Amino acid sequence: MTENTEDPVADIAWMRRLAEEGADAPMEGASILMSAGLIYGAASLFHWAQISGVFPTSGLAIGIGWLTASGLFLLTLFVVLSRLKRKGGVMTASNRASGTVWSALGWGIFALFLSMAAVGWRTGEQGALLAMSLSSSVIMVFYGIGWAVTAAMHRSRRLWGLAIGSFAAAPLLALLTGRDDQYLAYAAALFLLMALPGFLLMRGARR
Image: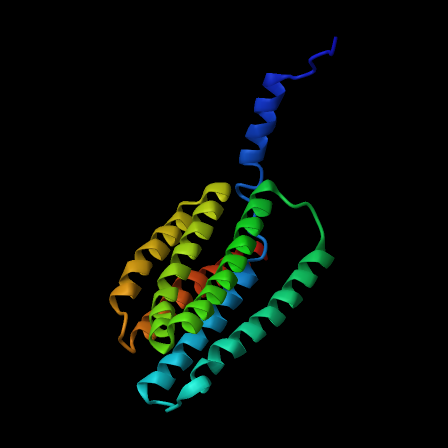
């Protein structure tokens, strides 16, 4: 006969500690969010400048800003993750969950762009342009999910505001489909909902 060693009271207490631990702890990796907002916000501004005629370009050169931004972000990601690994220390449940969801969302965005490339290959230029015009809305939905999970784990009303703002930005960006200023609005969303919060969280973690 196997002895039952389960202790419901201890299990509940352990789950409560997981929910509460790190609620006031600073969020790790906020510099990654700040970098993503700054780099891709700048890429969106550059794309707007290209298609609006400020920096007239055509053909494959139009996408060069996004490719450059992705390369720069991957380099930044490698540097930041290496620094965090060297730093070590105790990782709270809140930061583990936040790190996992943002990492998963990053891979989700990568899969999104592969899907857009597949749409362009199958449907031609018009299909690719339509998919790209919708990508900013989808990415903001991804960011909303990331902020929502982070807000729940850190029990932060301010972070919930970022989640709501990201969700609200998605349909607003979709309403601008076909207009050059969609990329201006997307840049503003990235700066305000990713770069600025990332900077403030990073500064708070240093205190």
